[in-house]
Image (cartoon, rainbow, N blue to C red; front, side, top):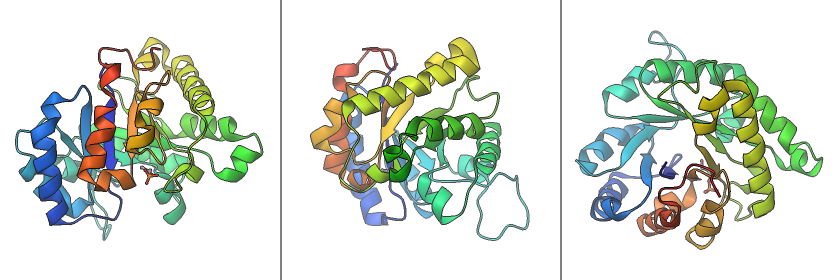
Length: 257
Ligand code: 13P
């Protein structure tokens, strides 16, 4: 399975970035050995889908509501994202958990809504620095995983999981490669335990300060099926350099070493 490189623009980006990113992606995506997904702010989904045209890159949202429609001012339904051309949606990002108090149960409901609308959910899990220092990182992530994924998560088309240690996001710090490999191994074991063989095929992405300079080392790790990229995804050359680092994994099963 090809690795997946996902750009999370967060609350950044302009129509000008849409144009330059689409131009660069259109000229280089076909030569890449990975799949690309760009997740701009909701207002830029329509222009990004249009600008990408037939380029082999997909577009995703950064959140969706768990409900189908109704009197929920400011919220966006999964079906609305799908209707305008999104194929993916990030759910349970630590910034939404923190800024909006999102619980695992709410995230689980959002994942179900996304799947029902035909979107591929990208479910984020990750510990904060205090938990890491207390030796509780794995326990925190296992708890989030168990409570954020609905029972059909591994049914085709399966969702994606992104391990994003909160303290590595936007900080320029990353866990050691041993720590990333250990956490991805633990996530894989939990997915297999819960979903059987289908749990072995769910891609597990790493996120948190992925840059052109460290992408090759991170993407070469066992059970790392791709990257969820924040800051570097706002710079077309950096995002594509990270994607180019996925090339050696061509033809590799997710997580195969
Ligand atoms: P950075 O790549 O800026 O650390 O952000 C990671 C992230 O939160 C992606 O969702």
